[in-house]
Amino acid sequence: MRSVCFSMVKNEEDIIEAFVRHTLSQVDHLYVADNLSTDGTRDILDALVAEGLPLTVSLDPAQAMEQNVKMTSMYRRYAAADNFDFAFFLDADEFLRLDKDLMVAVPRRAGKGMAFYVPRLNYVYTGEPKAGDALSVFDTMITLDTMKLSPKSMIFHDKAGCRRYHIGNGNHHVRDWAQGGQTVSEEQPQPFATMLHFPIRSVEQYLSKSLLGWLAMQLRAEGVNDADQTIGKHWRTQYRLILQENADVTEELVKKNLYGSAPENRRGEERPFRPDFPIRYANLMRHESVMVQLVKMYSRTIDALWQERAEWEQRLEGLKTQATEPEASVP
Image (cartoon, rainbow, N blue to C red; front, side, top):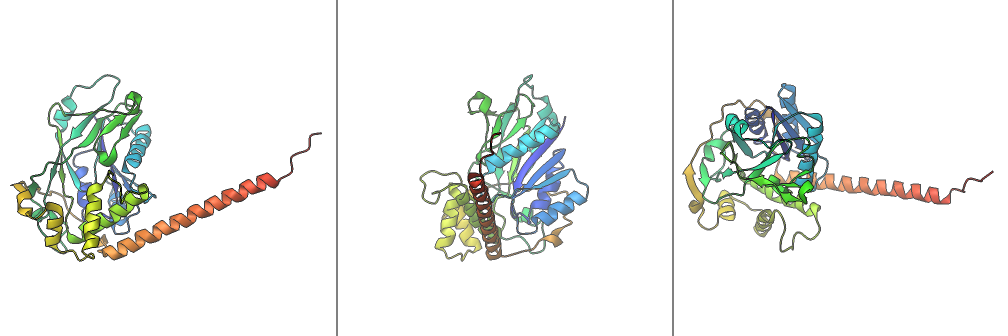
């Protein structure tokens, strides 16, 4: 039985190769949409495709953080073109641990899809990885967070039964619009899948994730900066803290911002992740500063706005032309 994974990524050069290689040790095919990365992410993905891995890479050209819409679109598009039985939805910092025998043994509902929650184990940031060692992040992040994370979701795919499935924000749940938008994710009957989560891996990556991520969230909807309730609220908090500190962020400040005044209280059980794959494309990383990444994102957003304006002006001219053309005479 065939399993696939869907992922949307942006500026993940420090972990993208490890993510791809590990994920493909767990599933049969990986579909990745690159959301206008300005670092070496896309170059590394292209190199992995050229290597012959079962990896399909596409471009996600919209800056706005509309992960639920984009992931749902990916899932439905490839479901029409590919035959698969199981679908996982991962971010580039989430490493799947899968027991395929247990998964296949779960009874299926004939003619219907099923969705299950996948628990996440969160790893705590404890310090900077070694420069030039792409796998050293897994040496520094070996301690699990004592705070429980919300789970993600996966699907037991059925072409008819999942036709109106919709992936929720952050891949946290699955809704079925054939049932009025009801959440259909349920607990696993037996623990066949879990995720290892490596969310904050360095000061630079923390800055990039917080600043670029929240700017993308602002492009999603108006007024999110001051809204009482909004998705990604935790990233708004980090965004504000970084601005408050004039972007002068140290290792200790990252720990304090993430884990409070007593970061040691968030450090629980040690459970190291041992990579068993090579890293071949570290030379394709660009190591650009957050300032450069922000400028590139801003420039691309401006280009998109001008293109949108040009398209609207072209449409307007077309409407004016139609309005001034004389009506055809009737013989």
